[in-house]
Length: 509
Ligand code: NAD
Image (cartoon, rainbow, N blue to C red; front, side, top):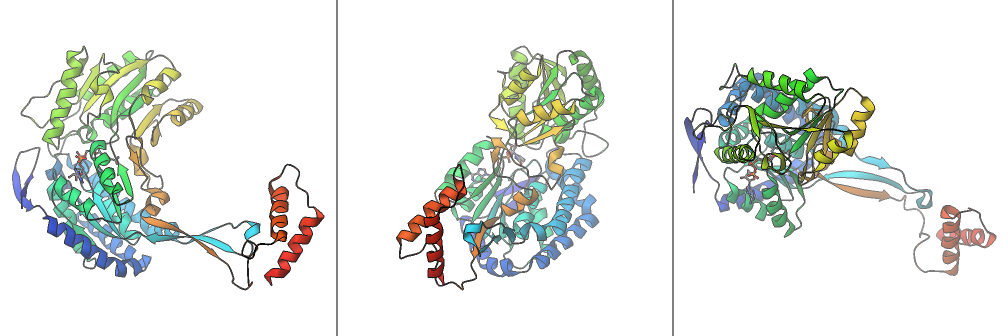
């Protein structure tokens, strides 16, 4: 069995190790989770939520300490670890405490008159064992929020955290031990892609995957073998469109936060910025000035920390290198040093749509800027991407902002803000195109961890139904008459139909 070192990417310090799960351990974990499912799914929702409340209290009491550990695993500054991992998780728990009972309650739906006196409703049934496979960029919240959603909905969970940030996997394991969940309800399997693919092959009842589009495709192909449902939360190349009537000061502040927060390692980072040509010089002056004022160090008194993954650092470097070689200019930052995990916040101008920096997910602190001359061009440029996760539109004209927002091929859009749609747990989150399949968060996101069971209920007092055997001429008359009356151009009853209905009604009693 191989061992994963626990390493702080910002300092290079190694602070322990964790052993990867063996194939037998993966299979045993799935079997144990399946066994635990029956009792857990029969536990009342209020009891399940009590475990979450306990977790929320623990998060609040130990938030700073947990954030420091997350910083240590990722190289992000501690304030970001607190805001985007701890706060967001506590907020999501509170959302479930308040709204899960209503979101998971049986939902009555109307029943058409022809089906009278039946009643219909939707029952949200837990699916079984949910495999959560998570990435390294927000290693805490992108693992724990899907886990909590699955648990609230009555499922048992197996987490396979990222091998790049294994210490956060250990942290999550400890946290669930504190919550005191029954044996087998939550299992953490440490390890890399082999452990992940073994988990998929062990046939969980659903796979909730967050990571790259390339891995998402592999997981979906493997899941297809057994028709295992998947939710895929994948990458992005998010556009930001700044119109000439935008509040430029706000847009510049939003752009640098959106591009450089978490060192740009955000699936919803601003990765392409399109600014109207008329305000470009002023906007560029503002973002340049503000970027130069950013402090980069680890872990505090700074805005920007280090990169988390050395592999990703190579990709960012390659994108910057290619752009500069093809004529782009670095207004701030530039090509990072090869031996440093810190990439300085980099603004690139003179970029073109064919450069990798404008086409592929960079996932680093780089803000490439282009100009546009009218609304149609801005929409066309923004939509020219295989991805569609988040986007932002900046304008003081409400109608224009909404019109453009609705034309963007993107799962989420922010107007005069960046990334923040994710922070509202009432809103579903997810991508279009290669940014993913399915939604989580919001009612649809919680219900995605259930099977929606359609139930139709007849009082059972009549001895037969209109549509049952034996077929008669009256049934034929009745259905064609009903079709003409209910759905025809000129609804009108005719005497033979009415007589047929009368005779059929008598047959029911
Ligand atoms: P990745 O695809 O390399 O790995 C993600 C996880 O999948 C890891 O736990 C990894 O061990 C596992 N894995 C890899 N191969 C596997 C296989 N064949 N079978 C099963 N599991 C396998 O992604 P990453 O580099 O960890 O994360 C960065 C990517 O995640 C970026 O593309 C980013 O945009 C995306 N992301 C998306 C969202 C979202 O919500 N849409 C959020 C964060 C990150």
